[in-house]
Length: 113
Length: 114
Image 1: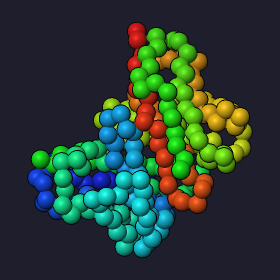
Image 2 (image 1 turned 45 degrees about the vertical axis):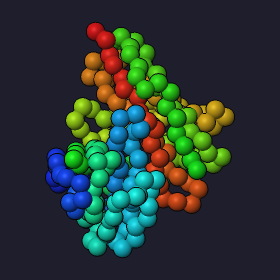
Image 3 (image 1 turned 180 degrees about the horizontal axis):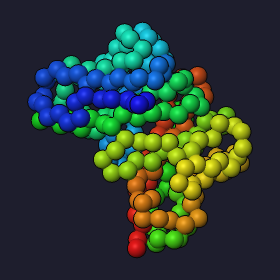
Image 4 (image 1 turned 90 degrees about the vertical axis):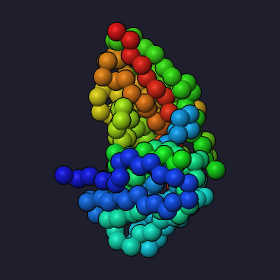
């Protein structure tokens, strides 16, 4: 089954404790992206990757890191989480950027205390 | 920078009534335009997209949207609302100004009244 998977689905952590949210897709997609969803703000793009070893900042990259060492995986790293990073996070992938449909993962709900 | 505006964060319609969700974009060059739907506790899934072919785009579940360049709009409609349409709807554009970003609107939560 074609899908985007994220782990964990739920995470409660404390300020400053490094964490990684994994994202994997099995569709051989080139483009992958991370978003955060906050009430009243919609989805905002954090980082995106056009292919292996090619990443760039979205609109809200501060406090986040990403890497793309393999085509299927695109982990999101919070090196020192803060309470303002409490949010619902989505990973998405598409064949290419532009007109192609993005396929979204189920989301990761992160709470930083 | 491109932006997407969705008018109305909450819209309520009666079952069987017309659904109209509004989306306007800001771009001098027509971008690619998308409508996604998010059901409770789920990720987003594509409803329909405009990719510079036909200006009237038909999607899943009876939804359609019309691209109007002169109005920079891409409003989503459905002739007759069903209870199962209750969800949050997001309009999005892919940036054609040289970056590889996607920009989403703030979303419209649709409530369908029995």
